[in-house]
Image (cartoon, rainbow, N blue to C red; front, side):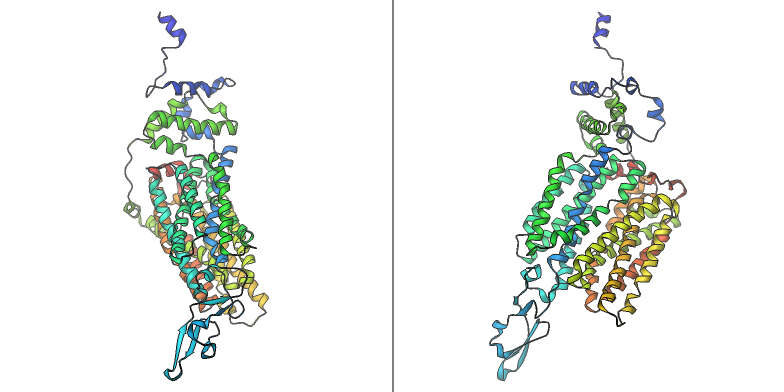
Length: 570
């Protein structure tokens, strides 16, 4: 009888952490590779002597499945860039007398009113009572494009409207980053990504319909929260499914799709008869991401760590790994012991770890504390300049808005590529190269203050102004991408997620001031550009002060180990 049971396979000799249900038993036969019998054997050297876990061994560092997933996740950067920069095209500057005039009918007969040159104030003659200066509230428009400033009759406060509207977008980015990080404790990154996409679609539709200024600002804030949900969760997903130098490269090139969004924005906005049609175009583009949601992966380690039921956690993780292995053509890496290995990894992930608090970041050596202060200051200045320079293109005139936006997008893309080159080729000296480049470019562009007083042809002035705005944008994109990708090199592994959250949140708080710094252009466009150049020099100086510890100088991405992202979930 005992021999019969052994023949029927009813008394297996393998050790199991938990009773394996029938479904998981069937899965073991699905991913058993008959073509390669060695795939069913688990080498002790692979389970005990390696830093890579079973998920990394099955997925590999990179493959067709990771490439498809990266392209899908990177797409969220394009609408995020559009919602950030669309204010350039939905609220352009208008020219008085040519495109708008003050409607003086509410002040009495036309003969009793004298309008100022900018058509923002009216001197009203009340006869024996004297004169009174009134602010114009209604305008008559003669331009073909219907902008947001025309919708709200704010043509005389166009700069303040753009700054205030952009402030709410930046505030939404701040709130969205904090909320997405906290929500990732209870919701999977894919759930946050999908919910952010649907909410962004609804906000885009509503923004094209509402005609109330307060609702417009509120929807811009909510849209920014949704964008940040997608950016943060997408970052967590592709950081979990890639490894080694490919993960580091993906982190460095994440902002390339942001730059691509800036390049595509003028094409989206050109020919639109009103600001509502621009939002309609953005809404239709979001349908592409909605269509690709079924192919958007989830984080396998999040599933294994956070799902309460062990059976369900292992089944979902196995499903992700099988899909990746089939697409990558690496099904031979999958062993029939995969559920057992995932169960062991789940137990390891659930082992109690010492809590890491924010104050512990600052309790190390004096040199490490100095590096933390430097990286916080550098990232804050770069984020302020990145947003401010983008809005500063309005200073070059509406006629050159398309070419200037294209130039800023190209400059940012070149900056990301330069960061990739410096990170993989300069290694421990990459910080000094990026910082020196920022300081050199900032110093060169600062001479715009002196050139502003020179009498030169308009074409030369516009070309120099564009060049002096694009070069700092490239330097800022280079240093900012490098800091965000290699931030974990500055602290021990268990403190990396805490440092990342602290530095990014701190930088986004200061980023709120970027839109108001652009108001300096009312004094002089050169003053506004010079202020941003000084910040670039300061950020470059702080970047030069950074240094990678001796053990974290590998260009293969050891500084952004996958465990950094697991700590962020817990």
